[in-house]
Length: 113
Image 1 (cartoon, rainbow, N blue to C red):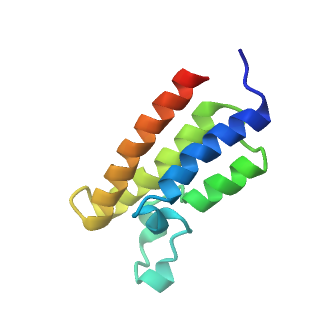
Image 2: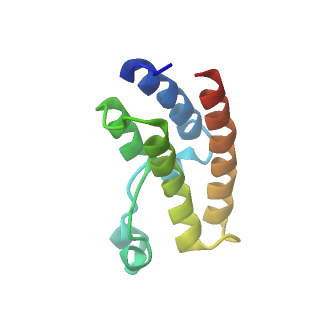
């Protein structure tokens, strides 16, 4: 059965809020500011910037019409962080932790729907 957009958004928001409320969630909440962070090459490496705040806005505005686009954008936040910072960096470790959390929560969302 097809989930209504509202119900779909609520379920996805619940997953997203778990990520945002994670002790590391704040790291991924806002867009990366290369000037502020002193990483001028960020946009050379990361071609599709994404952050959890943007995912949340898109959810609230009803811009996701299926689970896979929500999943792709959310994972992009963390894969970008790993791509830019490296798997073994502090940020890379945080990104991997949240990616695992997302996978677990997302699987139960899909199963429960």
